[in-house]
Image 1: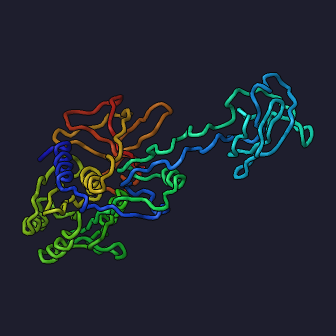
Image 2: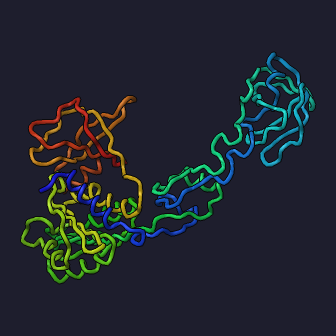
Image 3: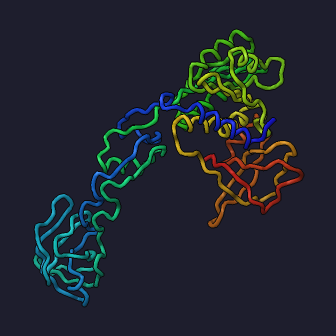
Length: 403
């Protein structure tokens, strides 16, 4: 049994060794479809932004020196609005009416908000407040300069990124193709979600949580169904799954009489790199590869499956995507004591809140690794390092947000 850190090191090393451009090629997608994909090209400003000195409020473009003493009455010599600039030169004693986003006319060096003016006639206005040079406007290239790199490869494209790419004329974007993830659930006790379980049966939830986790990480998941506890059925589904970039098999990896998954992995030539991790839940987690295909045997209990995916599968998907590192681990102060396990690091459901200064966290009531409802009622997973006794209230704990 290995600790979490060693397991993660093995996973990352294997992923880095097998990562090649041809395994996760790039593809061009429409800008509107690029959200949440992994960027594979530099995004560079095609022009200064803004392209000209522009007003950031409605009002009057003035010479700051003309309004150093107020009230001051100025001649209105034109109007500048977004998309239709005024072709005027603001000379001493003059001003130009201006709208938000409009180019600043020549000669002006500040903008007075309309709220600080009083219109006298169509051709004159009284300025009621002084402004400094540069006030009320945004200078050319103050946001970015032509040729400046705005976004780098490996970034997961966010909402603002889409807007920024639109602003520099990127109608199509080069992104990582999605790795294919095959998902197999195992067990005679499982029935499909649209079936009513009989005595001793449960609905298959793992396939669907794994599907969502894989899709959120950036992969293209495929459900291969439920493999029964007999070798021919399991062999057929694992054979199909090994055609994908990553195969996930949930259940059948413990020490039970009908836990055949590792046996079938061996039959197909899977090189297993570890098969037990010192974490709770998720101890019977298996990782290996056959050729270029990564293979995971995940625990059958639902919470264990979710935790094991987050800790070990997600980093492999991100590596294949050439993505930046994944979710940040946050820290919070424990509000109550948390019992330690002497042999395994615990990663358990918790409630986290922000008190205005820092995060505070406490473990949530749950009945063990099969208790999905306990996880539903939590909003985080808190990490309790292995050891004797308790992790005391007031200590700092790491946590993973579920929101």
